[in-house]
Image (cartoon, rainbow, N blue to C red; front, side):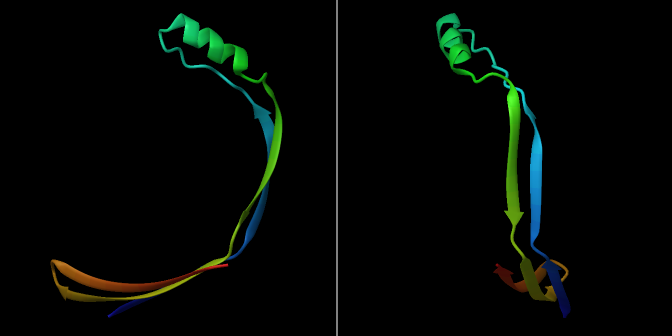
Length: 77
């Protein structure tokens, strides 16, 4: 039998920087012009992302060289 456990704590991350927008040409000049006119200008951006706490426990059993069975329980805050 094999046993395993892991825990990841909650993490808050703040991102800031600049957003640079670029169009990928489609070979259709009319469509490309419409898309280009709707792109926002390059600008500063910022956001925050919270990654939740997570925990996992598991157990595995090797039945043969070709077969292993595994059961896991996962929790996310």
